[in-house]
Image 1 (tube, rainbow, N blue to C red):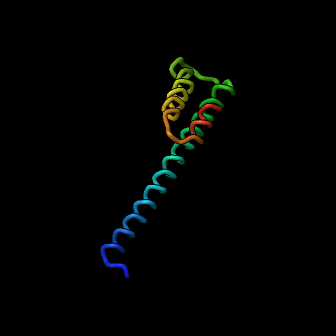
Image 2: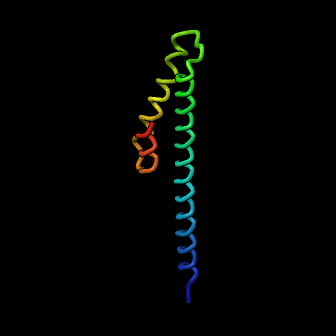
Image 3: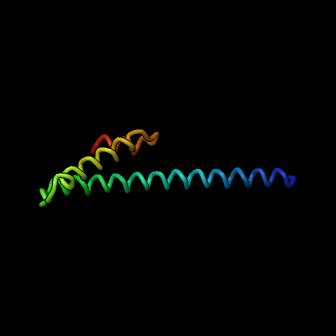
Length: 86
């Protein structure tokens, strides 16, 4: 038979595992959103949109570079591969 403490510990471990898995999924989705922002910024540059001042011209590539640099520090192999592709 299981005692109450054993059931509680088992429930806590299961809960912590679920929370950890959900946090990992949230981190992956956030990284995907940031990569989408990089794609958007690169599209703006590629499309040669009319940009009126130097700050606006510099912003998309600078922002994209910063995003890619921060994402490259991840432990997630899938995200690292996507960053390398960009």
